[in-house]
Amino acid sequence: MAEAELPESEACRVVCMASGKGGTGKTTVTANLGTALAELGAETYILDADIAMANLGLILRMEDAPVTLHDVLAGEADIEEAIYEGPHGVKVIPAGISLEGIRKANPDRLRDVVEHIIDRADFLLIDAPAGLGRDAITALSASTESLLVVNPEIASITDALKVKAVAERVDTQITGAVVNRVTKDKTELTKEEVEKILETPVMVEVPEDPEVRRAAAFGEPVVVRSPKSAAAQAFKKLAAELVGIEYEVPVPDKEGVLSKVIKGLFGRR
Ligand SMILES: Nc1ncnc2c1ncn2[C@@H]1O[C@H](COP(=O)(O)OP(=O)(O)OP(=O)(O)O)[C@@H](O)[C@H]1O
Image (cartoon, rainbow, N blue to C red; front, side, top):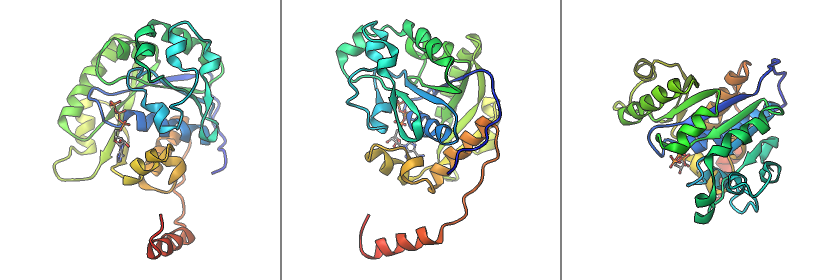
């Protein structure tokens, strides 16, 4: 997709990707939203502040990065050394995977990292740890706004409510919710119910889509590996909404469908 004509915006938007409950898909949403924003032409950085799990690097095939956020937070490396380029030019600051790295990292240095990046970026997405531990609160307070990544179930929403309350205490605006892994099963909460409980708009519903896991297995965001999949389209729609442009639904690609059928017939991936 060609880069869009983006509206002028003055300040970098520092967006904390937050969730109460673990495993809602926060890292997946961060990697895909960041890549989709970069594809639209926005200068986008994504930072893995979930320094214990470090999954962002895995989704973007950066698990072997020689210098990581751990080293920066330990005061042992300059932030410039920990910035890597991902698909569509998205800049990625991965966390490391060593226990030693987690031990020596001082999360209080996160604010300095944010300060360093905001002068040159349109968006900085911070993948925060789930829950309300010290690292999660540090990530929230270093951000100007937050997106709540939830699943359409009551346990996920009530945990997100707790995050929302803390975000308000640290003066971080809640921009909205991303409801991930939607199957439209009758037992799920609807968009309207989620909005009513969270008292915040649902910006997008991302469907449960096996293409997401498939892409992750290849170390790629789904917006790159399967850009026409239902989940990829939801992430692209969210990116368009954040930059304030109209999302163009892609015209169905007959050739693509045909080649899928042919590959299916011959049992190929
Ligand atoms: N829309 C989706 N459809 C299918 N699978 C998904 C979707 N979103 C995420 N997943 C899968 O769910 C799993 C958990 O996702 P992810 O690691 O992004 O969650 P997380 O909230 O960051 O987890 P944690 O809180 O443990 O850091 C991964 O295997 C991911 O591929």
